[in-house]
Length: 395
Image 1: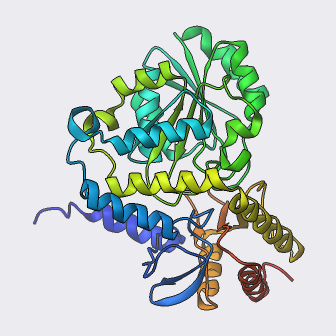
Image 2 (image 1 turned 30 degrees about the horizontal axis):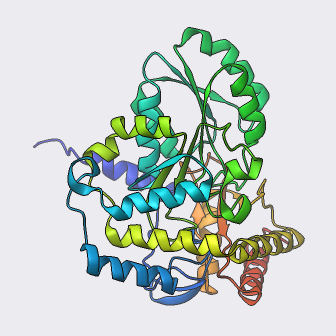
């Protein structure tokens, strides 16, 4: 009898279940908002990245509907052949003006943006200096480039300098790449100090600002604006699927760099363009941010209140500096149990464990948004307090 060729899958699936690391995918039954239908029940939503509450905004929905009527449902081509529509170019112009850069390139997702930007800039003769906790999309983009990857200690400019001095001389050129806001911990990269170190050695600089777009900086213009590094920093990677509430990625910076990436980026060359509906909705989101900073201010007010109250209740919120508030629990099984208990009380906050975070660093991650009211946050706090006491996490 032939050997069971799928035995390795069964064994690993059993191991994931036994270790509490198997992923339980819940099903959304309503749009992303402060309250959602999840697995058939109404719950307070602390999971989505809908920072500014735009994912279900009437103006974005209207813009998407109008675009479908005018442009159809899809471009039906890659952008370099017959897929670049006037909508794409308009969005790139508006994003460049919003972010105060010379040019931008709009691609299918933030994940694609890192794969589009890194390989054209560095290759097998070069060195990438990467923060230890960088996002998987950065790690994958770096691998695709073939460059040597040197990891420096998390948010540590001194260690970055040591690593550059040691490894750059053996390479043709170097690229510093870091997340702006780290998605699992909610801390902010010291971009000003990292940029200063990179500048001493002529190293290119790149930041993935996925969780800073619409959150940091004046009116949500991002981490480069937050640190006042316009014209100094080389490449910004952003996403339009979080604070902007839609989908897509953006590469922003000097026109020379963006034009070069347009010639080389594989997601641009080999994958169909973003749909008219999504592009038009992104334009509407940019318009809302240009008009008012109220949503950004409300987001930060909510995040500050929730974090301080959770700390008062005795929870460990890690090193969060942003609307991402991790509830550090350590054990993956405990984190999953805590999430399940919360869900039973009507609060949706998913457990996150290895490999998304290191072993022994399991947590619940609360995503604050401008869509939450103070009453919503109090409902969540009451639920956390109740479950925390039941499971012995707090007193």
